[in-house]
Length: 164
Image 1: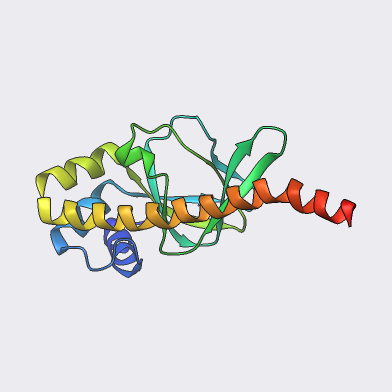
Image 2: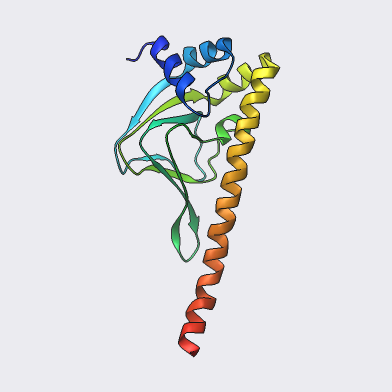
């Protein structure tokens, strides 16, 4: 088991949690656990409940959505320092994508309900966390938009090639 001081050190080095107030890092470290996922492991499934927000320490995680008639479509890959499973903090824990470890991956898993309590108790830290969350969500929304444009463009491109 990883000690809380080691978890705090990791949190202080990861982009999503770096530069948070010392007290916030202490509070997050007190409730976070290390969660390791072997390459190919499903971390969570779209539509399923998941209580944790994860911050990737090392490895890569693919985020996929189920598209009728096309199966799973990769929306984004999450790198070290980034978070995933934002719904655990903001949306009650129902996942909007599926996440799969693309490599052996280590994360720090923070219970979303506990992180929300930390944000509510310390508004400055909460603002910083929510600002980072909003930035991550904006990047994911843009990536999803690009994926959707690609999906809708594929049949038109295929048709144009056939009619040439």
